[in-house]
Image (cartoon, rainbow, N blue to C red; front, side, top):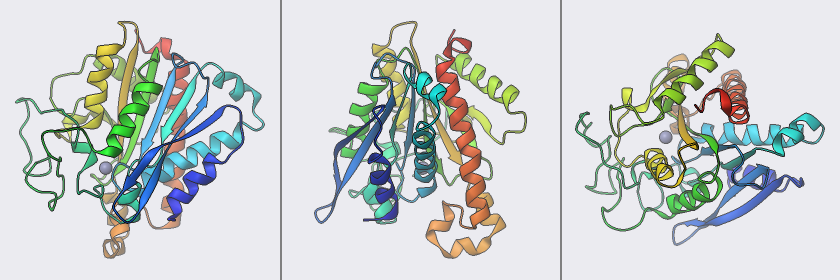
Length: 319
Ligand SMILES: [Zn+2]
């Protein structure tokens, strides 16, 4: 078993009555099947304010899974002695799938076993406010090429079906929910994106997203994140979070809000500072030098904690 899956199983074995772990299903190829774990921590009430943490959609981007696992381990350890935290968790919750594409991570592939880019596989099309980037925006030519969306007809890939069920069960009933999906690889900066990716038009909760961004600026004056609508930098078809946001609008009442965020950790800076990383496929998407790795972990744990507080104090941004 590879290191990240072993760590998921280790964290899943923590004993705490506020932790629930479920194997959502198995994915992989004919030779090897891998479990996909879903964790929930805190209140059992699905209408409670909820923070979702997701990672490992793209198998090469291990650092996202590392950040989420580091946070979950930190939280579960702190819960052993911090009664204030336990009290807070009695009326809110965190739900997480820290490793969505285990086959990809074990096989050093961005895609899943059938060659599909899971972040381009949802039934969402771009509108004509934006121009497509050939192949990169998503295509249906062939699974041999990267950024392949899968076939037009039929359900989403198994990994995405598991995420779909989990999100609908654990987030769509919440009165106030935020989620972060962790990626790495694009650009020099850490970009924190709110929807949409499919259009340049503002999404319906643009105002709420900007309030969260303003509070981040005010609370952490020296934070590193470039906060923007995803389509300002990166436009794709079939974005999973565009899809979940639109789906949530169909079932959530007027007073309930779910905003899915994406963190794209800018890994080009890691390569620039250490060009030897180019010799190693891992190094393109993950920080290699240990002080840089430690800094990456620390920085984003603070961000997750800020989002957790936003969920608990949702009255400040939800209106
Ligand atoms: Zn990615």
